[in-house]
Length: 416
Image (cartoon, rainbow, N blue to C red):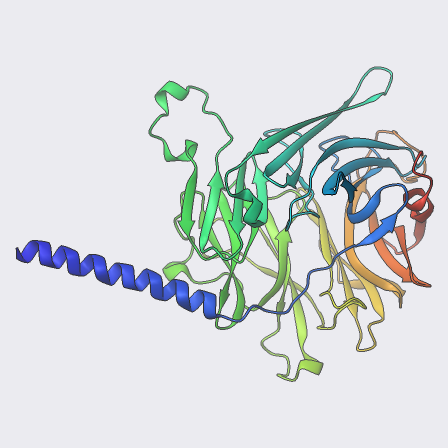
């Protein structure tokens, strides 16, 4: 009888602890940081939500992907399009019902597992593949993968498997899509099953498929802290301590084997007007000693639309380049770059700068010439300005020199 009583008592204590943690988590105030965003209307594409460089592992071409929404039979649909930045020719790659929270997400699957563009739709994820035939005709193919409960997902990453969080939920979800080479020997292997972890994720940051580690943020009494765990759920730090505290934003680096971000500088004055942000990067995160690089410090001011400064990266072996925006107290913007074994520098100043930035290596020194293969050493930055109440979309090189203005291509005739 005593044994049953102790078991019941222990169960009640554990249950009470879980409910207390959930209640405490839900009581924490949500930070008012808004991530860099796009939202402008094009007669050609619709309500544009995101524009990024096409990943070179998908196709090594001078093109961007445009994700936009339009109403279709009174239902919001998302449209993923390919845009050749030399000719302005666009190709529709996929269309699907819009996801209520993830309407701007464009991801690229691991280059070593598959070559897919990943987006979210109302009931799951969309895998889009593109290829060219001998006559250089572009062929897209889309596959919709429905997932129970995914309509409430509010952050995600996809590296063969899907890692996601859901709104008002303390669980971290893993949806398995990878198939074992010999499934009849793997029936009891948890790596081949869907999993959930009680991690109280605020946002999924990066699934590092090479080191089999997952980074995510969680709300704490300090604000937003960044944590890391192995794919099997084991924490990579002692007592599950955060890797980075007071995070403003974070994202995967280009190759997916680490992450970058911005965090509040603990050494800066407590006054909101004088706060600064640390620009950090961690590559190959495998232990509780992640070798975090602090690359720069910038003022903590928002862009003209109230979003935090944007950041993006490109990597190749040891080499890397981070490009990031910064703003003064009058919301005038600068583009900064920090590269391997180089000091950070300002490459562009523009009082109209706002929103995301996106850096990529392209195969030619002049991105106005399409479909030329060669050395992937030239780096180009996609950025956005607001001029006379109109959004402009531009490309500059790593010195800040304007290379191309894509505005007319994006705003032009819907038949182009």
